[in-house]
Structures are given as C-alpha cells and as structure tokens.
Length: 168
Image (cartoon, rainbow, N blue to C red; front, side, top):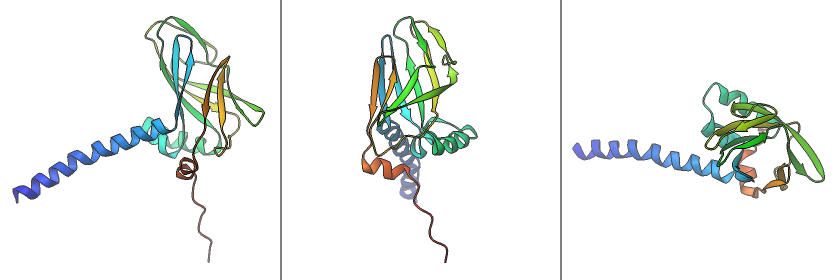
C-alpha cells in the first residue's frame, strides 16, 4: 500500500513538471529574438499552443479568438541600457507586402515612444492588421532590425484546426 501511495505521489509531482517543460518548449518553438540596440525583444507567435502558456483566463480566451483571425505576437524584453522604443513602428513583411501592427500595452509598451531605463521590462502584444500565411516565411521589422519566422509543416499543422467532420 505504501508503494502505491508513493508511486501516485511521484506521478502527481512529476506530471506537472513534465507539462511545464513541454509548454516552455512550445513557446520557444514559436519565438524569435529581435535585437534592438539596448533592448533585445523576444517575439512569440500567438497561437493555440502558446496563448495558454502566456495568458490566464479570461484574457486567454479573447486573445486566442483574436489570434485565429489575425497575426499576433507577444513581445517581452528587458533594456540593457537607457533606450527609447517606438512601439508603433513594427511591421511584418511577407511576399512583398508590409503589414502594420497595433501595439497593446502590458508594461512599458504604450502606443508611440516609450522611454526605458536600464533594466526596465517591456511586455506587450502586437496585433497586425492582417493574418500572415504561416506556411511561408515572414519577417518582423522595427526600423533596420529584423527577425525572421519560418515554421515547419509540423508546426503549422500543430496550430491549425482540423476541418470539421462532414454532416451525415
């Protein structure tokens, strides 16, 4: 009986740890770093696999719904020196088209210019006016700085909804 209880306790402790590692891997799998001078920003593509890791209900439900209709990126970084960040100058380029973003502030990411001191943290969401084709590479630009996203077929399949079964 003691062995059974110990086995159940070990499973209860280890299962959340393995799930936490899996979700962190999901975020990393859909992330790129945009190296701005004095402010490296991690950009996370928001989709069904990443939203649940980054947000809590009820916010998670609205963000997940919006991420189905458009391209959204979670933005996070910490300034390494005093810097000014213009949150309204992010774009996505794909197939010769440039798509503008609307920033949503979580911390130090208000629309427009944000003056940051060393060690100031930035958190926000960029919502683009159009959805990109995840099967093709796209770049996120801020001035001259660029981060390129290129998802594998397996990554795309893991975040696209399966078609609904046909009615009979």
